Length: 127
Length: 155
Image (cartoon, rainbow over the protein chains, first blue to last red):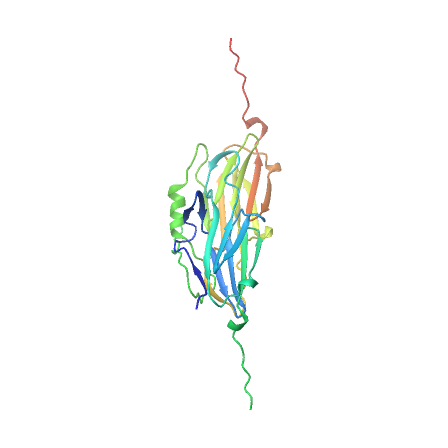
């Protein structure tokens, strides 16, 4: 059962306009373990301080801003002049107070622990 | 062009990370990228194709390539006959035993991008740095090919 659902159904890295800024959806991997979920997003070019992770009710939004374009004359351009934005809806099993985020070398890692009640528990059998 | 499988989100991928190419993206890159002025189209090989930008100012050519989550030791930069090649391998993170993969979108594996620099450069002075997932290669032009300001005298 997936407890991390997408708000947007578009394919990753498609551009969507939110207000006047352009955004790309970063590629994300989601892994589930007994303790929780780990969401890993590729956000190359986003420096520490330029990554915002906000939780509003049960919507987790990740926004990563980066420099808008290359400096100097462009001979060849493949990167997109946009920041990254992606939102997830968290299921009931996730403990919102335990969420943590880490950014290293253009990879953002969000750790979403499961609430204690949601973890599988061994029940000892007496007798 | 190497055939890429269409990327689709997986709810539970029992095969681990795999190598999911994004066909739409590759196609868009081939058809949509501008080939300005002097530069020739770039060549690419490998499991995935990181985005490459090439710019220049009065002094040097600057190549920037998006390589998130890499170790510096896994990136190779070389210059041969005026062709700059950036290659390497992005290793997948090890999966722990009790983990289930719910979604796999990120790309891993080997890559190689080559680009012909339009003017000769000083090979000894080429530098590369890696920060925030971006590799920046700076190749200073040889003195004789730098753009020079020519004074126009009006008689």
